Amino acid sequence: MKRGSPGDAELMRAVADGDRRAFEELYRHYAPWLVLRLRGRCADPVLVDDVVQETFLDVWRGAARYHREGDVAGWLWRIGSRRLVDALRGDGARGRLRQALARLRHRDVASAEEQVLARVRHGDLAGSLAALSPELRAVLQATVIDGLTTREAAVLLGIPPGTVKTRAMRARKQLREDLA
Image (cartoon, rainbow, N blue to C red):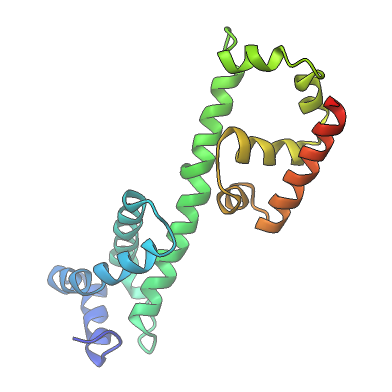
């Protein structure tokens, strides 16, 4: 069966009726294609595999929502790509950020990095960081401390990548001025 073939509509009708064999056939036919497409958007193969599984669970639960005249591949891509964005926004980078911030808030002993930063000779780094606006501090937290790329930070913070770059530049400039 080719992607987008007339047999797709019958297959989806059978899946909507709870036909497990039809679902397995749909999975065997489209899962490898969806994995390849999603891996073009995300380098983490484990996350991509999870997203593909979640996508097909959504299909199994909601096959009746499929519009008979629509393209099955397009419908699957829409579900899969939205699931990937949700994963990147949700428990992925954002979850790691929340965990890192929680560890920072509840720590009694200063880390080696904190001790070094406390001894910065050209100014009070902690005071300068505290003086940054929350928006600038959040961008520095995501890109410098958590090591996220501009794109990942943009998804995490819900802002365009260009805004991440601009805020990072403004934050660095303000820190240079404060610490000079």
